[in-house]
Length: 291
Ligand SMILES: C[S@@+](CC[C@H](N)C(=O)[O-])C[C@H]1O[C@@H](n2cnc3c(N)ncnc32)[C@H](O)[C@@H]1O
Image (cartoon, rainbow, N blue to C red; front, side):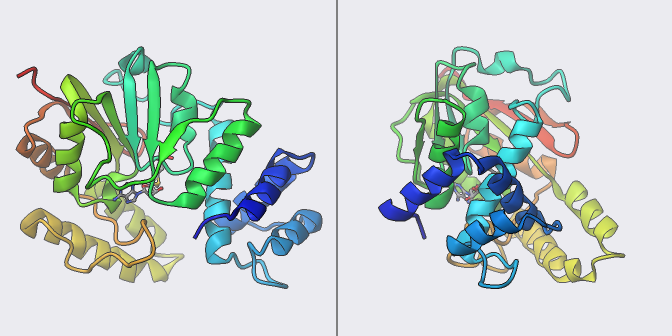
């Protein structure tokens, strides 16, 4: 699924046009399941085929467009800053200064936009074409130059050995096959380079399921699948229930911090921050030895 040239041009005109703020708010609201009352914006969303006719139900394509709008809106609301800075002294902006950075699982590229002014170079890797296309449009909206934001998967990176000072993973490791993804991250780091991973672990995930349970019993089944898959991954090295094909964000796993550290050590990295607590997530930093 991706925009063809005609629909890309139409989307670009809409997201750069006069009513773009309302359109973005409408799509972000639909994505979050919030009440949306802007009939004019809704009629544009319907004309683009992003909701089913006469409903507020997002189509598959519309969901990816709306997800990008939600990410973008949150990014603007947090003053266009990286989401994970300011929670711990174990990570500050200086970690990125002057570095060649690769973000794996970059989504529509909000972190790439925040990193651009800090780094020597930044590149994103994202398997979902619509996220990359929406990222290109939203960067234009921000007056930023086009980014390197290419296709690919964490488990088989299209980059040469030793290409980056820093590899970044933010809220993305849960969808990956961790052992090959970490091996690939270690391969593309230069000696002395660093992997920075920010993401959830099992405890936080289970607390969220338990707190959602009283008002949303539908969380039981996916919660159980995630628990089984996470425990399966820690014990056997693979998911028991396979990820759904056609989507990159199904069947997440949230291994314990100790399991993540073990997997990082297994690929030859030296763990320097073994799961520092951020607001909701954990921070891991691991360096590639010099020799
Ligand atoms: C929750 S989003 C996070 C996006 C971004 N890192 C951020 O912080 O805004 C997770 C992203 O990881 C991507 N992803 C999932 N599996 C992947 C894989 N095996 N390799 C690379 N990216 C993957 C998804 O397509 C999705 O865009």
